[in-house]
Image (tube, rainbow over all chains, first blue to last red; front, side, top):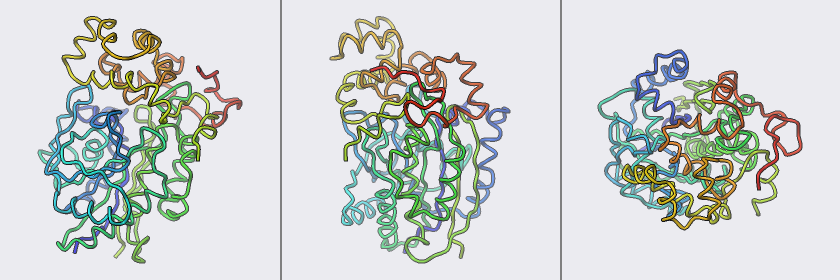
Length: 285
Length: 137
């Protein structure tokens, strides 16, 4: 059967993608950001997933105000990097896993989460920047990826608790898939940042690190935090962090009495307007 | 479970909810049109004529032409949509965010390198932080 063995959390800052694409990773400003992923890149080579479920948000790229799905799972065969106004990122297209994605959609909808199923979509920096951070410059991504989009643009966005329960539902769905697959689930976005108004540039280092601490050790409590706290403490765009709960809720310690280990934890300020956070949790066994 | 009260006491922050989304519908959809190169060219060639093709209010059109992002947000714009205007102008997200703070590009960049804007005094309206400027609208 398929099993979720690890979760990866990371910010998905567009300027990081631009630095990557324009060969600036060695500059003093960017060097510490990319160095923060070195350990995880090595770990991924030794712990290669068969499939990644990557939770991200679309930033008014494929979803405009024409349609705003709260949760959307991509069940198609492949997705191109989107042109977000600066030209498409020169990164490989994303190969999906239609069979597992369709299975998850079917099983999760029967657990009362209304997923929108999407077969044709271009994926933006929310998805491709984490792939670049964790796989570097490659001709093709090393495994199939199931993009899973969450609305964090128009409020109300789903609560952390609902996201956490969705993660649990995804785990049950993956576990009931008959093929033997090693699945990783990624939660992306955040950490503290605000891109609007007189409070633009907000960073809350203490809050971000509290979030990382609790995500590791007290995830159920953390998931109960109301959405207003994210906006107030971590900035209007810090609300993206609710997506991390989907990945966290899908881990073995929450569902099957498993034990986890922290493979890597990293925090850095700034990358453009944003605090970079990154964490890798894996089954301890 | 109204969103309004809680979210309205954060300084310098407009929550993009259903009401703002309705108000800014055509402003935001105009922004989406700028993801096509031919539309960017048409907009740049004659901004007024291009904007007049959209069902936007005069206030929204003026805010776009003067590149007043704070005003655009007050009139229903969302930063992820508005950023397409910045992209059309060749601006980065940092330049766009900085332009809303009253700081120069250099000052804003220096603030970020020094660790960003502090949260203390900026959680609620009426505190004493550096983001406590009267909100427009």
